[in-house]
Each structure stands twice: as structure tokens, then as C-alpha cells.
Image (cartoon, rainbow, N blue to C red; front, side):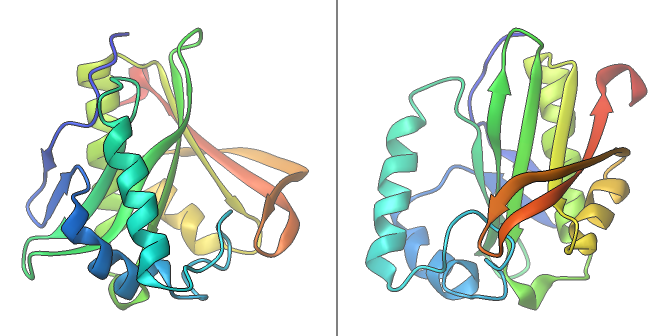
Length: 182
């Protein structure tokens, strides 16, 4: 494997790119301030746009690290950020990554996140050379699991009481895909 950092990726409908300072208002409005979006996430809804600006500043600084993978999801149709997707854990020894994602509820159910996840998986396999990509979701959030399945991931199993999110300690449902399966 060879870390290559957060490069711009593109699909028919989406532009996956690095965050920019001007994305803060969109991020705050479209997903980061919404308790329904953050319900099963590990961070609380942002109280104001200054919280969002601080996150984005920190992320932008990390783009210098080639092992940092964090994309804003921009819907080409409206030229507006609607979510994000990132590698939340990278294990270089096993050439594996765990992915996390979230998106504004106005765009749920439109197969946007499976499209973004599929593109990120392809990049991590084809360009970075990873062997495994995995993701998990709270057992009470099965729609996130459906995103993983649509992106070609297979159910691995449930890790009981293994995670913690805004709902408290939770069972995690894990999905993965191996490079030789795509």
C-alpha cells in the first residue's frame, strides 16, 4: 500500500474533494447541526457555525498527511456540500481502513451515499492499494447498513456492546469488502 492522501474523486452526480473554509456554512446547515443526522454518530450536533469552522480548520491542516482521507461530498447539481466521508481508522500493517460517513437528511434515500462509498472504496483499492475496507453502524440504524450493502460490502457480524455513539453504548454491525472481491 502507498498512502496518497485525499485526492479529488468524481462520479456522475458527485464531486468528492477536500474541505475548504467556505464549506463551513453548508456543513453546519446541511448536516452538522441536525440531531437526526448525528443521532448515531460519535459527535454531537454542532451548536453554531463556529464549531463547524474549527473542525474544518483542523481537517484542512491534516491534508498535508498522506494518510489522511476526508472528503466533502458535493452534489454537482446544486454545487453544494451535502455530507462527508472519511477513513476513520487506518491500519497500515493489515492494509485496512474503516470508513465513516454522514449526509444531510434532505438527500437520504437517493442512493447518493452508496455512490460516494463505492468511489472511495475503488480509490482505496486501486490507488492506495488497500486489501480491506470496512464500516460499521449502530444495530438500530439499519439504513446505514443498506448503504454498505449497495456499495458491495458484505455483512460480517455484530460486535455486542462494542461501540459508543450519541445514543450511548451500542451493538455495532460490521460490513467489509476485500480487494479481491471487487
